[in-house]
Length: 255
Image 1: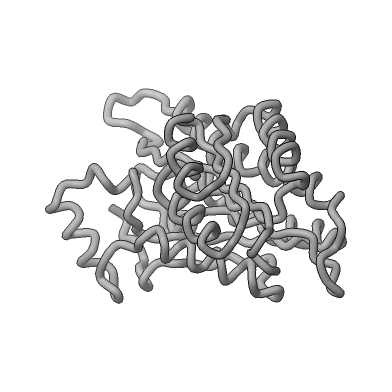
Image 2: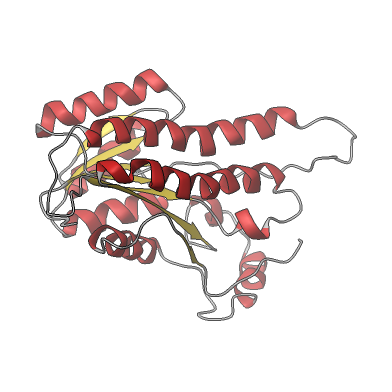
């Protein structure tokens, strides 16, 4: 699918992978909508990409619906590209040292990462299915979700995070199969270690230790490298219903 002149919605677009994606898609001629729970972050990236800023929480069904309405109002059409980068990273053991329960952390992580992605998927599917096909294949849009290598290699303390990302991975194929009749493709990227807000707080020692475990290249990924894969997925019509690890061949140890 052509990126130029297509309307693209990027969630979590105010920083990290989302910001990198927004900047690359804008450079390819897309018309951007930047959704982030931080209005200031969304506005900053929207200004840089010539897009519109949407302050919304991905877990808010009505707020997400209002964001889609705003996109149609501004651009005259619903987005044909959705990239879900919004998410949170949490660390909590199933059985903490104090013997307490960690259900609240688990529930919040699932709510934001998995249910939030589903809410956007649901809204996007409804909006894209009403659009006119773009080509002889009947293509109407592309939805790209973000999992993590933790969905397969979850470490100790990542039960909630791994479960949320595993849910995203598991819904990829059934979603792609269901939406195929509308000409909507669904893909998932599972990043490894990347330069994001989640990694910014690492000490130099921890960072060096993590990078030493990356086979090649032995460094953290850059947001634009994630965005490059987004571009390739959008442009290649045969990429559908698949999860792609983007991880320097890393396999995470238990801890």
